Length: 257
Ligand code: NAD
Image (tube, helix red, strand yellow):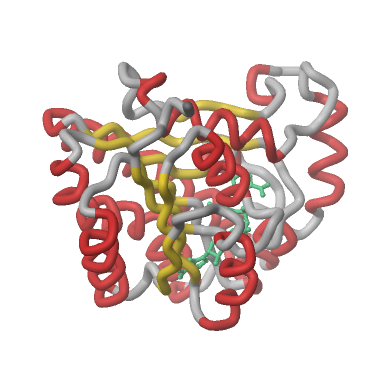
């Protein structure tokens, strides 16, 4: 019997089998958690449906996190079908391509807003919407995904780094705000992994190579490793941890020179 048997969770951010969200969802399902998957728009429905159908008893619901109405309706459906929630994964980010590719100083007002709305504010929106369902479980655990480019200036990461800094601060403010309700909020700062979103970062292949050369473990992380770290932070194994940004990066962030 898995350690999450009888527990329920919702997953935002599966696009395909290489998505970090899918790696974490598989780890949660392996331990017996029942999951609701959301997909962003009809374009991604087919691939998310194909994956979620391999996990018995899971739900599939549309949700673009930039729409308050879609966020509201997804949690109404989850409330109806699952009754309560123990865990929520936010593995969502977006910035317009030109704002990622341009010099940072050329970031547009619109691109800055979009990146922050989808990559940072949405964590606050989905956490607020999940609260009544967490309270039915006596608490809950929320996990977001971030990157080192929030802490240091990383070439090519640009406006996404600024949005991730906002996401990390939101993790801490949400954790401080919701701790008294036994709702924990943490983030994983993952090393580079070749996913759909990563392809939007120019020079991503050399970023992978550089990380593998410099990280203490002399390699890049695997999706399975992010999956297991996500399982830890979304399970009662981490019950004393909230407001943390935990690196899963083969140690890259601890190296100075
Ligand atoms: P991915 O492309 O598989 O996942 C990104 C997801 O965001 C997709 O499922 C996409 O549908 C979703 N999304 C974008 N806009 C949305 C919207 N408006 N509404 C709902 N969903 C929306 O790529 P990934 O690398 O698995 O990214 C997942 C998370 O991990 C992101 O937050 C990303 O910044 C973070 N991350 C990725 C890496 C990496 O190297 N791949 C490293 C550290 C952190």
